[in-house]
Every structure is written in structure tokens, then in C-alpha cells.
Image 1 (cartoon, rainbow, N blue to C red):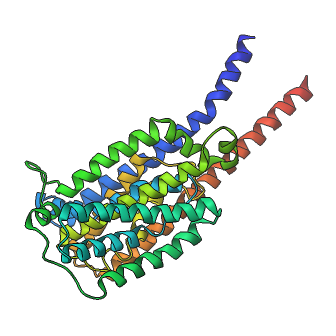
Image 2: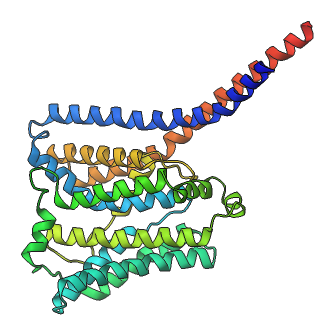
Image 3: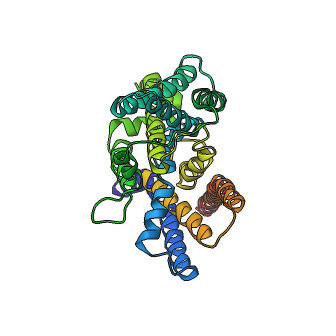
Length: 352
């Protein structure tokens, strides 16, 4: 009796143990790669470890990092948002237009965030109300929002923003080398980490990504959850547009073009799978740092922008391909173990 209880308990704990090992394994691999990248960067360039370079390194991917946080949650629910960079561009253009029209900066910022919420709400409405695939919807809104950005500003740029706001964009947190906008990312990372890993909402997100029908029948309010996710993504993408505008002191319609690929690469490389239901905020943060360091090392080595795009594309392919190769290899190994176990039990029963 006690032996059967022990066997049952062992069987119950095996899946959770495997999940924990898989999660820790992927994040541990990212951490090792991060250390290798830091050590390699310090050998390749003597300025790599300087505080000024790290300020520049962190500032250069803060907008992508901001957009990657809500995008991680969306991908976990087996959806995607490709319009994040276009929302950034629209927010930047709107900010420039409002400031050019002498609208007080505080009101201009609020309007930009509301515009981002509307962009996210449009995505969510089309996906939830008409049950359209998020890939198709957000490809369409990617072009739509970028088009609106060009309608607002055309080819011109607005650059005369108040010094106190541009100082925030290029400043650092007092007493540190951390860029001030990166402080926003740190605060949001903590919030998203708590929501995803220590709340009912987080468990619902994993449930939706694992099996949407089962989650629906278990009481998860699917439509509301997805609407909130896309609205959050829109608001934070608009915030990234504000940060980008103040960091470069320039509002242009083409700001942030192509950033969606880097954000998606960071999410997938962080262990969030294309099929949904898996992934952690810790993994995404590690992958963001890894991509940022690789880009910084290549930039210090005077590598051309075209090569940086090739590196980003390669990381995107590897981040999608590698987890699937590991999962299929693990599955084959597990099936082989099961077949051996069944054969052993069959041989033992024949002997008796």
C-alpha cells in the first residue's frame, strides 16, 4: 500500500519536476550565454565594461524592452501583436504634432497614451469580436498605424521639445549609470513578473495558452483577458514612443521602424514558445540583455547595420527552432525510455 502511494506521488511530481527543469534549464543557458557575451565583449573592446558604454547599451534597447513585456504575455496566450513598433511611431508622431500645436506637454502625453490604448483596443476588438487570427489583424494594423503616423507628420520632424523632458530621455538615475527611461522598464518588469507568476491572472494566461477551450470552460473570461492584454500592449508601446522621442529629441513618423522584429526575437529567445502556454519574464529579460550586449559589441567593432539586422534575424530563427528541436529530442528520449520500461515489465511478467 505504502509502495503504491509512493509510486503515485512520484508519478504526480514527475511532470512538475520536468517543467521546472525545463524552465530553469533554458534560463540557465541564457545566463551562461550572457556571461560569455560579457566576458567576450570585455576582451574584444576595453571600453565595453565602462559605465558610459553600459549607459549607452541599456538606453539603446529600452524601447524594445518595454514593448517586449506585454508582448510576452500575449504570446503566452498563443496570440501575437506585430503592430507594437507602428504604435510607437504613431505615438511619437502624435506627440510631435500636439507639441507643435502648442498643446501643454502633460496633456499631449496623456493623449498619446490614450491613442496607444485605442490602437490596442482596435486589435483586441477585431481579434475577440470577430475571432480573427491575431497574426493577420496585427499585420494589417502594423501598416495602418504607420500610415496614420505619416498622415500626422508627413516627412517632417519636430525637434524643439522642452529641455526637462529631453533631459529625462538622455539622463541617468542619480548615483548610477542606469538610464532614467530604463528605470521605467525595471518597475514594469517587477509588475509584469508579479502578475504573470504570482497572480490568478498569470495562471489564467498560461491556461489560455495551454488549452483555450479548457480555460474557457474552467471559467476564464477569455474575451476580457485578451482585450486587456492588447490594450496594455498599446499603452506601453505608446509609452515607448514617448521615451524614444525624448531620447532622440525628435518626433518622426518612421521612428521605431523594424523594432517589432527585435521585440519578438527577445520574447522567443527568452523561452516563450510559439505554441503558447510557456515562458517567463526572467527569460525574456535575460534574452533582452543578451541581444543588447551582442548588438553593443558588434557596434563597438564598427559592424555595419545590415549585419546587425542579420544577427537579429538569425536570433529570431534560432529562438524558434532551438526549443522545438530540444522538445522533440526530449520527447523521443522519453518515448524510448517508456518503451524500454514496458519491454522490461513484459519480460518480467513472462518470467513469472
